[in-house]
Image (cartoon, rainbow, N blue to C red; front, side, top):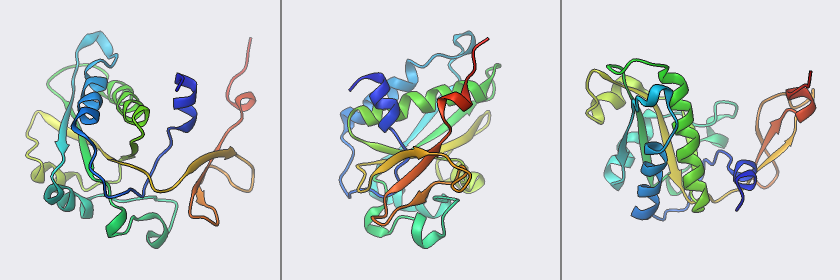
Length: 191
């Protein structure tokens, strides 16, 4: 797949097959973060990998899914849960623009996963205090995001953003996600 194909098809996925993500794909995700561009090459982003079914189950009640949808539509059922989480952690002892560096790392890791057919969901609506304790994250490290990974069991497609849709994603009649995006003309201008 070309980079543009990856960017076009790598969407957020929230329902997954109950099939483990292979270790070589997990290793690629870690490498994608390791190779990420970052300010002054400071490399302040860290990962905590959650791979055991027991730990994945403990993480599940501490994250929220699909804020634009009612829970019965947006939250995966027991047989649709991710099989792997990565906690994205910032080392606050390292100075720099942690938000930008974290964003670049998130893009890299989710694209690396999608290149292998593994979908992802970047999650900011999380119980940070409880997850910090559960995952043993200690100062000066700070939990920023959780990312859910797995093999998607639904589709997600880009649709034109209209006045009717606004920015809110929605489910179609097949329970597939439709994700409105602004037009290129609205997004960029030349001078």
